[in-house]
Length: 308
Length: 284
Image (cartoon, rainbow over all chains, first blue to last red):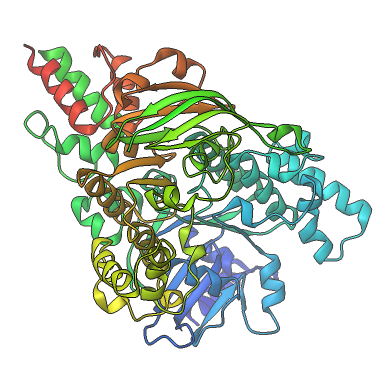
């Protein structure tokens, strides 16, 4: 109400008669960014269970944000993402995707905006070749063949797997499989990509490739990334970390602030960042409280090493 | 239980040439009571190797000696029960193998299969549910009402209940939160101190550094390196060829080395790392 009247008065003052001008134009910059996902007071429990798996969650996620969702096994992370994708229906509360409240009718449109990459690469292949597999989601959408061939090629290029398109997915390494799975998700041009522990089964090298790829795609394709993970190093890349415990949000903060919790992190099923653990073993050398970055720790140690 | 591979080769009878050879002329010894880690990229032959230890796979040539059992290309599927009772195997995502309607029945399945009486199997189940960190009240629950982490523990209890001498673990902690992972790893270490031989397939180099006595590195069906974790993680050739990645402490030490610190050998655990740093800064 206030915003509308303010807008009105500004346009009156400036004599601007362009009635199409969006209200957003006059909002402070921070508020101008739209919420791609808006979750309000959502409750959900599995059939036959007494406890709420999601116990009153409200959460706004902005377009292009990278959010990590962390918490112990059973804290409600996966349930929350299943609710976002409409695989489960909220008992109460609402979920808005790209400005539309999801219900039985709107969920199909909402789902086209969301791609999920699952944990186990072996559980998500249906095609006999890499390209068939990437085409699967597009076939479901009824895309004409010519258009589909282009879309598949583009998606495979984005993940740098175009040379593998005739290969059997089963002959690929874990990291390559996840890149193909990501291509399958990208082909449907989602606005939101949900990574449900998608790097946890990969070897360290595969993990690095997938994370770098997602970071790159986020900026190139203007994607919103929601990453469910147990890997503290992986959360360092995100803008925001949401900590879930027993179906509730217990922290909503940036990485450095969360790592400052120190040993308390284990209460949320997380381990402390490696640098914290090293610094904790060197308290007679360095004075440290809370979170220390790798760069910060190396600089400090080099300084001491030169002084001796 | 001593395990010895002598020139073991395994070729898959598959039309796919990509997966032709599973193991190429592998020889190694795993001493009784040792905690051995096996690392290598996806498809390098790690799982193929361990499946020979309880004869789930048989060699195309070569011999595997497991305690007083011998497995050769001629070994047939009869009389393998005594061997399999001694070699317990926890597969990846073992929770997908739960099928009984109560946790207790699920844990009892293995022991009964290996000749335990109903009563002995029940006793083993109530003991093992505690060992894996779940209370006795879990025994009457349906495995399918449990969380993923709890199901994993039940599946592990099921393997431990038959009291195997050797326990083979294929990425037993994949997908567990870090706290749960540490609890499970500590559990296996405790089993080792009770005299069990532990063989662990993993991608987690920090777990290797923290828990294993011996490390074996697989690459393209070949055993390309073995020794103590410290020796293997300091093997320049394996590192240059990118056959292994390093634990976090070793990576951190490399970064310090680039800025004036010196390490004769890369430290592989946090306590080794901090001890080295202190020594260098304080001087001798």
